Structure formats: C-alpha cells, structure tokens
Length: 254
Ligand SMILES: [Zn+2]
Ligand SMILES: [Zn+2]
Ligand SMILES: [Zn+2]
Image (cartoon, rainbow, N blue to C red; front, top):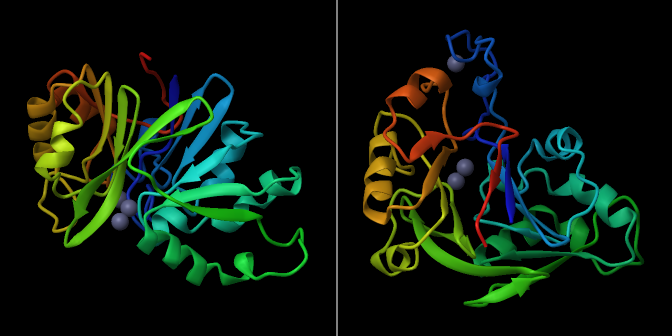
C-alpha cells in the first residue's frame, strides 16, 4: 500500500498570503505546504483523504487520473473546499464518486454543495457524488477502512485506520478507545500544528507524546503552520517522528 502526502499545511496553506516570515519566503520546497490531504493506493484502488481548496493543484501535481472514493475527516473548509473540483473525475465516469464521512460532515457537505445533490438530470457542471455513511469496519476496493473518533477541540471528528496505517488530522485529543486501535501501526500520520498551544490542534510536543505512547514504526506530522521550518524541526525530532512534506510517498507494510 502506498500513501502520498498531497498537502501538509494548515488551513491557510504555506506560504500564507501576505506573510514574509522565513518559512513563507523559504527556498526549500519542503516549506511549501498545500492544505492537508493524502492519497492512498493499493492493488488498483485509489482513495482520496479530504478534498481541500488545493485539490485541483494536488491532482495535477501527482497526475491523478482516477479516484474510487473520497473519505472525509470533517467539514472544515480546508478539508472540503475543493469538492467542486472533483468534476473531471466524474465527467469521465458513468458512476458517481462515493463520499464517506460521519453524518454531521456529510450533512455539511450536502448543505454547502447543495447544487451537487439536487435531483435533476446529470449535468457536467457539477460533480456526481454519492454520500455514504461510515460503518465500523468496511472496505473500499482492496483497502480496509476503520473510522475512529478523535476530538478537534470540542468537536468529534473522524480519523481513519487503513490496515497498518492511520491518518489523523486536526486532532487535539485521542480518546482511549481510539488509542487502543492504534497500537500496532507501521505508519502513523498525525497532525502537529506548531510548538505553541492551540485549542483545536496538537502541538509538536503533544504529537510526540502520542507517538511515544503508540510506538508506530514510522510517524509523519502534517497540518503544519509557518512556525515550523522543515529542515530545522526535522533535525530536532526524535525517531521515528518526522515532518511530512507535500509529494512525499510513504510505502506501508500490508
Ligand atoms: Zn484543518
Ligand atoms: Zn509566514
Ligand atoms: Zn479542522
């Protein structure tokens, strides 16, 4: 199984518009972070995790031509804002694209993209999407999917386990029942915003504490602000944790 980091940035992306800080003006491409998203591929099945406002650029950069499903973590704009740009995928296909998420997230998607779900003859001016509710364990093609609850400040959102990999973004707390499902991972993708505390997101040190407890073989931090210079912070991080970067391809043991 292969996971590609399509975006490793926090909600505004890096560089931040109008910011002239060292990271935003850095020449290191690792410091250019599109909004958080990832692609999972295994045995002919391709799953997109989140559909943020940079979706079009991400699909073009990675030359993605086919998607079998979209799985959503939650309905904040930096995770669903690119949904309309799924149009080229469903224009070329006779079937609609399944979109998985918790009931609240799917409700928000139906509200924000109401024109997508109106019952009229199919039009190429909107993506053909079909919302599907999450089951405790299910498969998408050849990929096993286990949704897991994490807290994003006061809100419960969805993390996902895919076989020996887990993808957790925008978490500030992982409930004990979810921690129990994450103890034997090959790869953990986990959000780590910055060093300063934030009410809705893990800091780097909080993410490191989770890694120390779960002991995955490898851990990659995502949803990063412009406070973190890739090279500087990566040097300080204890193994097996490192900062993810856009375009990074991670092989996952099956
Ligand atoms: Zn976010
Ligand atoms: Zn900046
Ligand atoms: Zn969020």
